Image 1 (cartoon, one colour):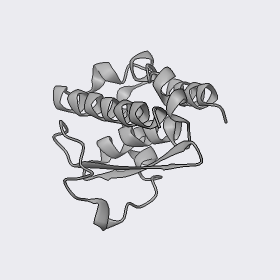
Image 2 (image 1 turned 180 degrees about the horizontal axis):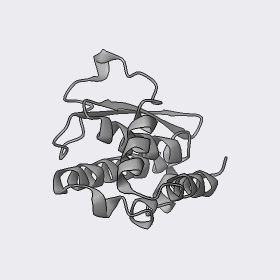
Image 3 (image 1 turned 60 degrees about the vertical axis):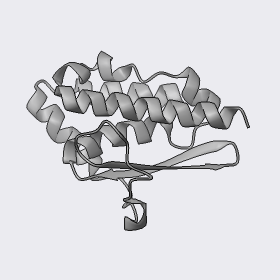
Length: 138
């Protein structure tokens, strides 16, 4: 599935819900789909700074693609990470750099997050873009 198709699927899936309570429940359910992150990665080295909750993200680079894995101690943050994982996992650094995740704003999610979660989400987006930029230069 192309990255734009993945992003359109996210927007379409969220459009099915009429209220934010249902959207949050869906976000929590998505977080449960993440592959389990081994505890050896739950260290400061992999922790995203700027998140009130703990969020650990591991990136690997193989065959020109970035693979992501991660986890959080917050069910909402896990769901937010799942959306980024779904869109960016196994994409090239150049694709990640050239495809901003504006769907968070388009589905209204950014407006419904508290300040600390918004800051954490922005830290996560910046970190992944930074990693993609670094890898695109290799």
